[in-house]
Image (cartoon, rainbow, N blue to C red):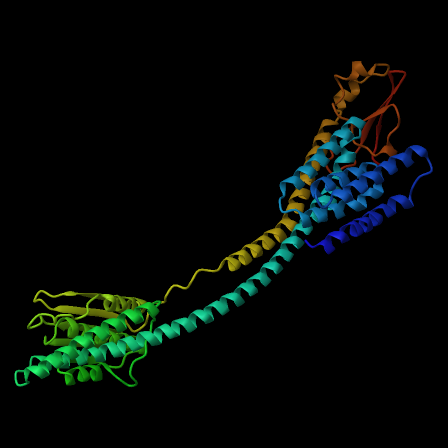
Length: 499
């Protein structure tokens, strides 16, 4: 929070106090006792406004309690409740404050001797002036948090987009370097194969055979250095890789044959999707390169099938006639790359020696590639989704909680009304046994435990009222028993219209 905003707080608090105190100041009484009471209430209101930022729950409790001093303090109750919802994340302190106000008010009315039917309905106002504004404030706070989370999410996406763009540029450079390695490595392997053929040619003089050996060794060394250099640049395999324009697997095999390799190709089926075709081309190219390095002179069999929605590739070379060439570069990096490429298409890959001493590379690539699982949602997306859930829950609570509380209070009042109605019935038999001149103590065994809850305008001082029969919906005839000097002086049944 900036210093500028902090300086504005006292001004806003003073303005809030002035608005809430205006109804009380406008109706200040002339009697000193009431004047001191309302003055103390204004001091309490100033305290509630002052602590409303640091202790919103306490300010709410004070604001609700002040309604017991004067009715005009009721205007501050919904304001403090709404501020508590806006400024507090936790719900327990506010729930405790509301429960404390309810319990304190109930105890105060019991001590004063106020009838339950008079003060208990006032708890509805506690819901309307306390709970409902508090929930509304919580909803608004959660909505503002959701909006802020949305902007944070947008900023996060922009940052991620920039990072993704930079990463893709680096990947493209790595891919180009990898393609250079694949193409040049293959050509250098074929060049080494030709040099090896010249090295063992019997019709060449020894001087030329030595030159061919040096050429082969230099080519092998250059291939190994190229692999090391490109390996530093390589980040991860891509699902698709470039190849010479228009070159097919048949062209690749024909190029290998022209270099002196004994390659047999068997190709069946029709065209395949680009992804599967690229994977097959890359797999045959790498397998031929490995056969050139590790099994020079050995026959190679290539089987390519594109049928039933899948492409099957098999490259098998026999054992080298004279063993692997000395100094030939080794390693399984190429096979690892092939496995990654095939797995990215949703296929399977296997490579290993055969029983005859050769080596086999096999792969199955589906034409309908399996979907690759995307990356999980970012933290900002999860935060935004959580904010949306909180807002939905807050809106539901803003409607459901007051409705449940009002229904609960209504059920309690209805139950109490039924209890008082049935507990205040004086049966005709007991009414006939009530004799004039008796004291209240003598009549207590005959009289009900409760009196009929009649309005004050229908009651006489010193008289007791009992229902003739239970009327849950109100009204009905009542018995009136009046006492004078501690004794029953009259008893009378009043019809509903006579009251």
